[in-house]
Amino acid sequence: MDNSSSKATATGTATAEYDRLIARHHAMRLRRQLLTPASPSGPGSGTGHDVDYGYGGSEGYDGAADQHLIRRDLDVVAPLADLIDHLYAVMFRRRPYLRSLFPASMEFQQAHLERIFHHLIDHLDRPVELERMLRQLGRDHRKLGVRPVHYEAFEEALCAAVRHRAGGRWTEELEGAWVRMLRFAVGAMVAGADSALTEPPYWHAVVTGHERRRPDLAVVRVRTGEPYPYSAGQYGTVEHPTLPHTWRQYSMGCAPRSDNELEFHVRRTGPGGVSAALVERTAVGDQLRLGPPRGSLLPDGDARDLLLVAGGTGLAPMKAIVEQQAVHRPPGRRVHLFVGARDRSDLYDWQALSELGLHKPWLSLTPVTGDRLADAVAAAGDWREHLACVSGPAGMVASVRSELLAAGLPLTQVRYDQVLAR
Picture 1 (cartoon, rainbow, N blue to C red):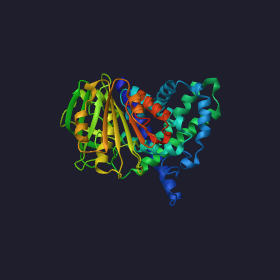
Picture 2 (picture 1 turned 90 degrees about the vertical axis):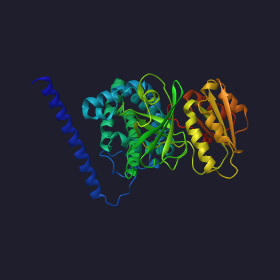
Picture 3 (picture 1 turned 90 degrees about the horizontal axis):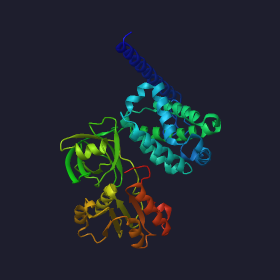
Picture 4 (picture 1 turned 180 degrees about the horizontal axis):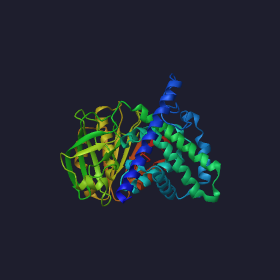
């Protein structure tokens, strides 16, 4: 048999196996629905996946116990980058048809999963807090073509990776903690995906404006064909036509508008990738795809004065929040925005901010250049009664957060998107 015939046979076998897997998933889902027609929907209802993920809602999961087990033996499977590398190798070897759901380069995907794992482990003792993020993540994964049954293959590969990394130190207790953590996460993600079945998995958008503010930075404006349901302070994922299956996270830089136009602030962080494509190879008229909005930087129902701290393109969500406050602001609320930049030329959107601040006595704008943003914020006043929102590079966010906590601001009043990497 020649190579082309062998490849065709392998492809046909993989496709047939995939079709059987999906058919089995649908059959089992239908059987559950017929047997339990009145069962409640939502996490843990058993309507989303073949495996019993054991998710009965955040209150039914003892995340603190699993957090203790995983942290105690984390060195057994560490570094997580190697665990994840083996996980994907196993999954693609056993389920080759799943490779088409992922981008050609897996480097960013693997780094993103590592951040997700760290976030899960760090917050397992607060499952209620995790649930909202995970439901949004599941809703977002619909754009990738991910079905609930695919998580079964992921769990199988995770178990194999844990056993491989642990070697002779593997225990059933260790693997069980990882599996329960995964099933809790998957249960919430499947529930999030199921709750979004009436909305599209992604939105088509046309580029309406492209301004190169710096050699490595552009403000990109797009318009969606139908309303994009986001709130000020949230972020979404963007796919460029030259890089299919490759999605990157960017915060919306404007409040929701009636004309469906959005704004993204994009900095090129290296050669290639979505950011480079958006900065260097994007023009008016180009078509992009947007994943569902995510994040919860600004909570509903909190009327305290706002302290907004932005660094780099972290300005985007803060600008959106200021725009939103100009239209819907609790009576008496004041807003203080600090914008950090390497130098004056890096204040790429200061003119727009200055115009936004005209005739708004409730808004104060403070530019800070150099590496003294955290110190400048801490020295500017007593923020203990404020709600603080911080956005920007991870190091900057950590520095500002540390200063605010040291100054007496409660942890619950310091908001930032922990998984979002800028």
